[in-house]
Image (cartoon, rainbow, N blue to C red):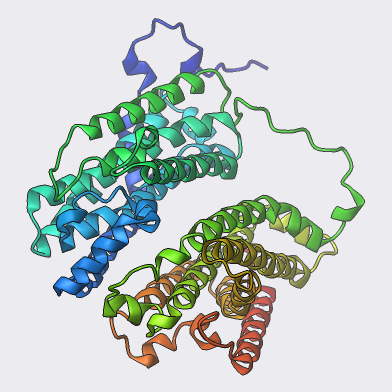
Length: 549
């Protein structure tokens, strides 16, 4: 028997031509575009619609001189620094407020779009064996990474143009709108480059995206702390790529040169990714995976324990992140009511009375935390879907483990983890508020308020479980419910949404603790609904066929 040698592009001498290293890049680019024909347009259009939505909110909040002055005061303190350095606040306008305060949301979304895109077509493909199959053809060593980076550049450029068009459609200056769009796209490119680097480090896609996500969180913290130390940002701010996009100052004295820093970091990170990819085998990471025990620990001998093992890292990271978020935002509660002239909009948004502004603000933060916890819940159900589609659930279910026990273990772990997350986040938010306001009772009232929203989030879990069991390919529809819950919950009062529209939110029926009391009958009804949805999802999963890719 003779063996046929397959020429691996990376094994050739260092002096080979770049064309051979990049062979097949064009074909792979078209393949990625075909595979992303739904996801990328959905990301771009969703972010653009979000900008249009925020533009509507901002226009309603800046109609009168009183409202403009209230917005100006909002951008002056610590709260304003959490979102941006506050350029142009001395002469605030709707477009300056939109770009300077809400811009950070678009930076984060562009970063998430880019890092998930790069991870999907590099590390995920290697985990699935798709990359090895592709490289067995006439494809250069760096073709796949180059192809996905080309798509990432195109996606962020398209997003920049869409955002510029949205700003222009709202009557704002088109040139400055293009600068704002470019600043958002620049953040996306930076994290595309960073992810091109992190996918070389670990052989697990979740770890790779987790490292890139941690870099995004660190960039936000560095920028926020730097902006708190000095007007318009201190020296520390310049160590964050988010701050570079802030420093373009759209609608104030717009300047393009800070984007060169973003382009430089994106190129340097991508170059490091290329260099490191040549030092590892396909499917492997530079940091070797930890060797497992030859025999599983006794405590893992159940579907519930296995589900906890799979979800453990995510639960810890989400809890830490939301606890830090809660402590920071709870710690600025005193600034909400610290003004001699508070606008009617702020009063309306935070409870309708000057005397309850702090409680109203904390109720909004509590609702926001609960909705973000819902993101963890949906991702947990999608992790079970991942195990199914990748064929790892099938061998488990071929044993004495029932489908009800397997999927039920996931639901139980997510439910318990959600309660623990809200407990810790509530404690930290309450602690921050207590230190800020000087009232220790907030520790317990804010913690109870967070826990009161658990039934509403469990309803979201039930919806995701039902879709998993009956219509697994439609599980993404849960994100629509989450998005609606977030924006209607935060801006429903400001936009005068009718009560029936707000009643569609699962968390709406609990009440607005700590601003008002908890509706315990509603809590019980929500728990029953959540249990019914989960039971229906389990029953559906027992009856349908497993799906593998």
